[in-house]
Length: 300
Image 1 (cartoon, helix red, strand yellow):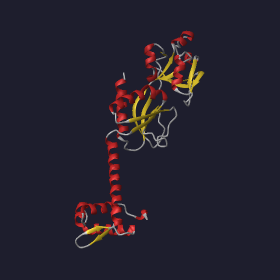
Image 2 (cartoon, one colour):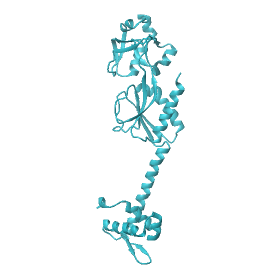
Image 3 (cartoon, rainbow, N blue to C red):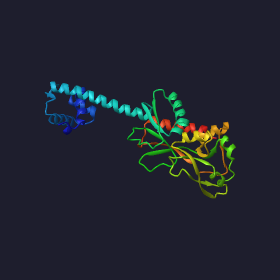
Image 4 (spheres, rainbow, N blue to C red):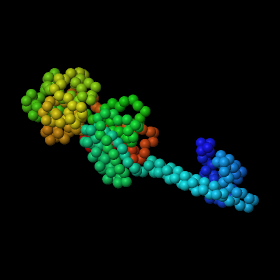
């Protein structure tokens, strides 16, 4: 029976009881008195009970009508509160921001940005999940993902936040043993720390200062399944690798790593905020803006 009831008639019924008469209810609802009466008659027919006793001068709720009115008023009040809550989530950051990022970028960049974001928005909670695989935002109920490199085709929406350079690096201790390469051929002869999650971890295409491109195949000595592990191997002298600038800039500044063959360049990679839905909630929009601003301030 519930599936046959027009739920819009509930609001007409509640408005009628609140107004106290069909005439007053019609004025409140912006419809004719006859239309109000028709809605109530059809509601009673759909329910199979009498809700109101009518006379020429007054109307009275039946026992069933009084109980039904109390339930309807509560339902409508809860519905209005739910609608208001949805509106607030679109206007002001609230609730829990659940997001995912890669282990290296999440630790180096996203987590510090989140710490500032929480201080600016104390009403928010955050749930950060770090993983080097591509998470399913909808199935895993993430509000936002920070992704690196080339995005896969999908129905998700994205916003470019920044980009990063890929740098060839090695530890001074390793270079003291084997020497610093002067060209790509010498680079290919050194011990290579490969990143296993890449589709071609041993093949890299470099662009020379004159614009010519050359693809080089490296000689693998070690491999790691995430960037943080590859970084640790390189810092500790296991060999040479290509690592993102956001992860090695401090190491280069402090002398723990050396950039090799800086005259050659590799393609710049993008950093993206990825989310579902055309209109993300305020918490998502606010954090995207916050992270983009931090990245802009950190840019050289």
